[in-house]
Length: 41
View (tube, rainbow, N blue to C red):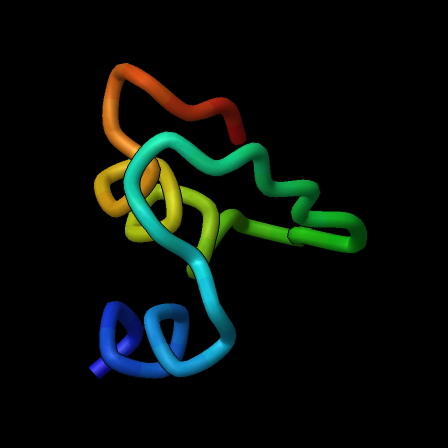
């Protein structure tokens, strides 16, 4: 579910993502999986 939300937000492989106010990182790990090694979170 989280991955679908992040993909709809425009996060893609190779992108740089800033997760501010991330708390426990609920969306941080899935965002990193989408961005892959080419991206940064």
